[in-house]
View 1 (cartoon, rainbow, N blue to C red):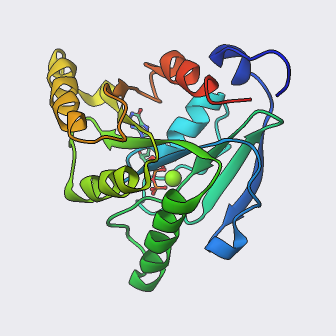
View 2: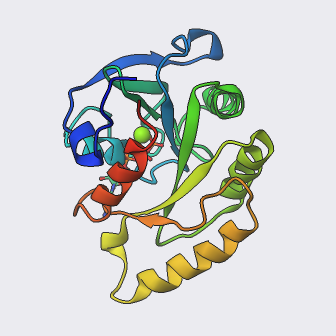
Length: 206
Ligand SMILES: Nc1nc2c(ncn2[C@@H]2O[C@H](COP(=O)(O)OP(=O)(O)OP(=O)(O)O)[C@@H](O)[C@H]2O)c(=O)[nH]1
Ligand SMILES: [Mg+2]
């Protein structure tokens, strides 16, 4: 413990440093601070969200090409919390042999990482839940890792669409014991939902 707990706003104002990038289970950094991971299909906006939360434009690498993040990247608010940007699961425009390796790494990380306190599973608000998302939900349920669904890119929705997307998601989450009951909705580009997510993550920090 560091004495006083920080609010979300305070925590995300702390310096956040790149700690390590791992491309295999063996090269994961030793467990330390509590970890929050960002998982989701390729291109859903994981790296953009890490940047938006930390108000750093290029802490995590963003790309138009799915498959940009090719390692498990760890960022750290010194003595408080780690943010973990995962490669996308599911389809990626990269060599098949490489994709196989990441899929295993993602699953091994999500299933067996001791300091992992929560997984933010990002779902593109326009596309909803896909089969690969359900597989990840199942893995997290089995491993009893609490997860928060985060609907992304809500700036792309038409007016009034968001409520229906949230209601659909709440119904899905009811069937998933490890899921937090309500999704959060964000736009990394416009800034919607950032304060709520920062507050939720600050609860996990030491
Ligand atoms: N409209 C909109 N586009 C976004 C938003 N967040 C990210 N994007 C775009 O989505 C694309 C993918 O973003 P990334 O952050 O690289 O996605 P990722 O999930 O990290 O992708 P991988 O690392 O390939 O798995 C980029 O073109 C971003 O500009 C958002 O809030 N709104
Ligand atoms: Mg990425």
